[in-house]
Amino acid sequence: MPAMTSLLIAIDGPAASGKGTLSRRLADYYHLPHLDTGLTYRAVAHELIRSGQPLDDEAHAIEAARRVDLANLDKHALSAHSVGEAASRVAVISDVRRLLVEKQREFARQPGGAVLDGRDIGTVVTPDADVKLYVTASPEVRARRRLRDIEDRGGHADMSEILADIRRRDERDIGRADSPLRPASDAHLLDTSEMSIEAAFRAARAIVDGALAKRNGA
Image 1: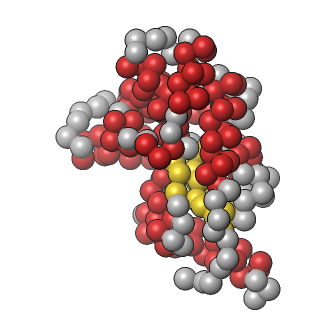
Image 2: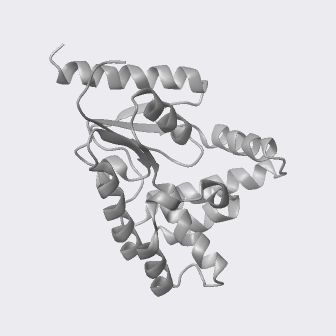
């Protein structure tokens, strides 16, 4: 691994594109803390579901966002498919985004750098990141990945319903007025439709190493 003093990596992309797995691999490789920012929105949605509040209840959503603790995000509890769908609805609330973005920026400011993944990292949360990746794949490939993940955990789902959900979430994320999903102008595009995770990791690592070499004058 190349020597470095600080490294901030921003990774964006739609649901089930592989950005989460790739982010964790890069964080491990470069010995950096990692934050899946989607979990922060899932935490808000989970709290609304748990307390029986409507997902469009802005007052309760904002209060839940204020209480989100990045050190205590229960990934297992927040991984349910229903929570992910609810999170994309909560994420359109501007004040919720504002509160969570500040928490995410604080995480990114820690000494040595970090890896953050989400949908607005390179464009809004850390526009000054050293490396920006936009990871994507076709909706059909992403739906197959999501189905495989559900089945690997012992669950059952319908492929057509998953594909429809993927497309609904894409439309909601891309079309929202506040911080829509889109690549940063200086992001490296990485389409993983035909890539294994190992191939995607090698491609991403080459991009990061290239950026480090350029920064170090190599």
